[in-house]
Length: 264
Ligand code: SF4
Image 1 (tube, helix red, strand yellow):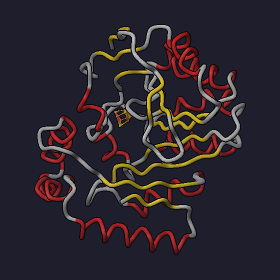
Image 2 (tube, rainbow, N blue to C red; image 1 turned 120 degrees about the vertical axis):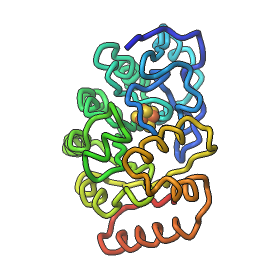
Image 3 (cartoon, rainbow, N blue to C red; image 1 turned 180 degrees about the vertical axis):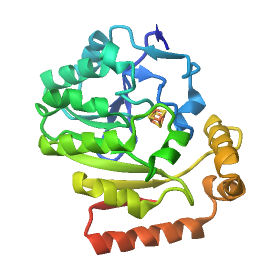
Image 4 (cartoon, protein in one colour; image 1 turned 135 degrees about the horizontal axis):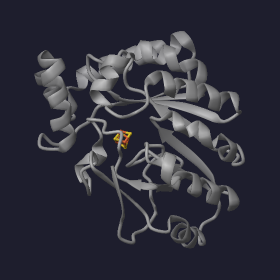
């Protein structure tokens, strides 16, 4: 993997998520290579070969944070903060150290077990939370769609360690892959270690988007009978299908008394 420095740009960026005004991506590009990744559609490099890091991330971020009141910053929006290169470059860890020093907190989303390395810093920031993203109930299918991410077992183990360390945890079931994701099974696996479980549907913008071409390629190879059905469901259509999914989630929520946030 080639790691290059990117041109000078803002590090703290607006975040459209509930409860977060800003987000930081310590890496530009993501080695995890999930086929459905929406960020792939605006990739600046070929993520199989090259990702970018900010030059002097701490100097630049310090300047940008100077005018802000302490608050929670989101990490994990367009790249995974714990992708494999983080073991070497520690960009994420440096950012967390700065947040802690300035009285900020963090909300992290990852598909890597490496996050437990930073429990020591995350614990210093009250009101922080860490989530793992899981979309598949078993390993064989996960590998088809999320080539380089940690296994579900490693992610769930990380979630357990984070929760046992007193850190607020969540699971993001995203994207729900029609006819492939078994929601009941995923929820059963993550519920004991998740304070909150968020569920989002698969949504793809356009037929020539990179993420659709990648998903289609996996479907054609492993689930050819589903490709046409995905075409009808993934592009924002087929509300009756999603209505049924939503109803089944509401039933699970009622039966198991879970803190489920359904965004389907
Ligand atoms: S981990 Fe997240 S950012 Fe990275 S490729 Fe997968 S979906 Fe995209």
